[in-house]
Length: 251
Image (tube, rainbow, N blue to C red; front, top):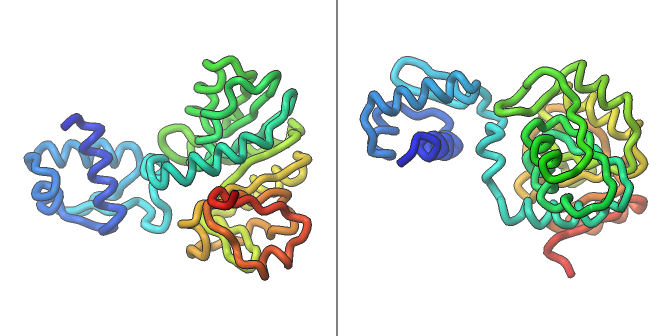
């Protein structure tokens, strides 16, 4: 097993258990304690875990690391991203946030004619640029490994460009129509998206519906499109008649 495979396996185990001992990881992954400790040192340097005597836990147990989110619910995220990319028209200026769900949209953008993308995801910016898309990266502080940017510089860059359409996702969504995020930075970024774009598109995996989160970013009456792999209750849809609801599992 290569180191990256071991690291991914450790993160899967932590996702399930939140805290484990080195001895437990040795038994599960079947590598020596010395190898496991080296792997944990790598994850700690990446800011993904917190080590304590004899064990390890997520640095923030309430939010899964980006690398894990990137690989979770792949089929659902791919379907959501495909529907989202269908909304992009020739010549559009597009905002893409730094979420794992939005990153999937990048696979469907090459071939779109004359579009311009601004994103806070350095990995996505590099991919789009390599595929011939005019791409701007917001800059800012790296707030999540390996390349998600945030902070004041990121917000300033967003506020200096106007978009035809913006795509974003968050950690949670309440079926009463509230979009939720774990930090104040998300609230600020989403306000900038709303103020500087003609169409705002919220991407919501079924795992985020009614999940806990701290801050209310906005409500559905501020969102033009809601795309999910789950259908919302009819009461919610009726409460927000100006929002277009797209479910990937509905024809």
